[in-house]
Length: 177
Image (cartoon, rainbow, N blue to C red; front, side, top):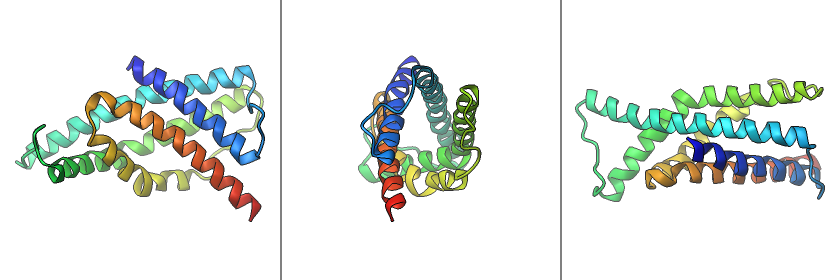
């Protein structure tokens, strides 16, 4: 949990910084010290939450498979069986647990902005964020769950940073259109 906190604190914050810089076309660091610290802490807390989601999804998938008398692939299973288990785990996590993480993230962002005297984004675009659970995060976390358990959170943190860059680039190009 400490590693999840640190990895998301660093990579999630970096992704958000890069997203703003790319979106605005500025080479200046976009946040003041207080906002940086609060954003970093928010990302760290999200990392702990996501670590819990990963554990709950893995245990939940195993419990559902057991209740249905379905076999779970072992460590020596073939690629197809590992991908099937990873897809089931990713789907369970993103459909059942993902929306609560998205809401927590938005509440944290709005709370940080309001604490610093800014209006915040409110709930605008939350529907689009929720949709990414299906078309983006299920496939990405399927890949993540095919990896060794000790590297999964690091991969997820790196993916959050990459997503920040992609979001910044997409917002920049859509603004120019």
